[in-house]
Structure formats: structure tokens, C-alpha cells
Image (tube, rainbow, N blue to C red):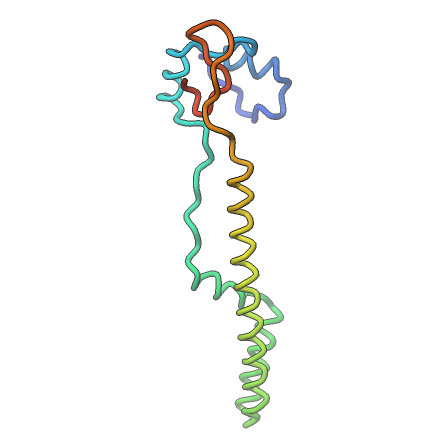
Length: 141
């Protein structure tokens, strides 16, 4: 198989992609070629990114210029002896961080659920003549 162009295949017509990948779209790959490509390129799967620890997600809730201004206001209020005001500001910041943390956690779980729903199905039965496989997950029969 010759080297595929550097730009992604989704920008090209299907016929050109099939030509570059040296595959007949009507019959697919011969089993031996599918195994060879699987060994050379690995399975046709997206890499899984490691999850972010919960404490990092919580600290990310404080990454905002408005939060910095409110933290500064709490420090100034405390420095002026207005501990009640400083406590209220810090309480509001804490509640805001908790709500943001919960929402971000829910969003990540929703994305994981959507990913499971949209993941490709397992290998399909081969089409075409015996010994040929087409569009099977991972490239091998």
C-alpha cells in the first residue's frame, strides 16, 4: 500500500480515498491484507484520553477573571476588618465552584454516554467473495 496523502481523507471523494488505500469498495480487503494492515496500523479506534482528577476539575472552577476580582474583594474586605463581607464573598465563590463542578461532571458523563451510543458496531459479516472483508472494525475479519 502506498503512502496516503498528508491531508485527512474526509476532504477527498470516496473514490480517491479507495484508490489511495488500494481497496475495492465493492469487495473490501482480502483477509490476509486486513490482518497485515491491522498489525501495521493498529485497530481503527480513537485513543482514550485519561480522565481529569476530580480535584483538578474543582480547581478549574476558579479560573476566571471575575473569580479573581471577587477573591481580591474578599481579601480587601478581610484586611479592612469586614470579616462578615469577606465570608459572604468566599461562601458565594465556594457555592459557585461546587455548582460548576457538578455541572462539569454531569457534562462529562453525558459525553461518555453519547460516545458509547455513537461508537461503531462490532465486526460485521464479510461481503463479497470468500476471503474478502469489507469495512470491519479494526480492519481484520
